[in-house]
Image (cartoon, rainbow, N blue to C red):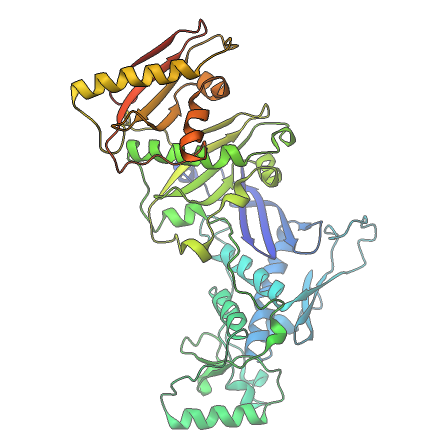
Length: 491
């Protein structure tokens, strides 16, 4: 079975493709199978149309070079993992404070429009510090994923004292490089954009040593940690950062978060999953209502594409995952990237339960949304209901008269169109949803969208469950006959 893993950042995306090891039969029953055999890897960098692509040897060299160089760049302590790269496929060198040279000595794909014909000519790509940090974060996401190449680990080792003894001031600025290296990169970037804070120094002696180290050091002006002598040993966890203001690291002064897909599978390991059928049914409608009107370029999809979509309890789309490579390639032709929640306006979605849906964009322009694992039992209508028998009968007659008055013309469909329609105590339509395929395909031939739009100004408004509603099954027949009867749950 072909497996994909995608680690996405605004300026960098790592895409791994591979297979599961057939000898590890226990993984076949897991929702997320283990990728244990790497077949191909692609590294997409912002500003370059073509990705860097290669096999396992290229990928292992890439993650080693990025991890070693990031450790050295953040700590100012020379790292042998970053220094001894002459024979490596991937190398990283610093050009200046905000520029870094990525060199690939291999026949991997060159990220340019021209073809790459000379495999012996190194590929050189200039990265700024923001792009570097995103590359580090993508590598960090890979190492944190226990279901992808679990045998490939970052072999951390202490930096020998000979690399730090020549400059005692630099030794006191060492920063540990672990799998959590991306958090330090993010902190360095964020600190460069805000006024210098005044940290609380625990001991006067530590403050004195830091001041001396800053004054005597000829190193670039990077965030300066307060550390002890033992900081020359890489795996030291105790760090108190003393950042300095440096706008050279910031290409833009804004800090508005860019919506990026959440890793659904990783999130499900830490938060509960929404499985209640009634809640799933209500969310199913909200997801459809968000995607269907936003899907404008339907002719661009020339084959069916399927996505696994994660949705919060309020209906916000917090992540999606392409089910196959074709879906991954065509994701920009769908509205999913533009519908992701924005953390700047909604807040974090990492601590709330999520629901999973299967979203299919059909090549003929039809949209299908359904729970990823289906319904465990028949869902019921959510919200407070009108239960008085006389009122239900009266509202049934009022709804029939309203729809009959607005339904005209000769039907072109040849099968029944079934809908659930809800009205409030005044007989005003409050919600409706299609119940079969014909109802989805021919909804424009019914008066329901216009009736709903005339009241709410939108045909996709979420249902209001705060007021009691009476629910009915409405059937539009090809003969022009209209049937309405009280609704009892979903059928």
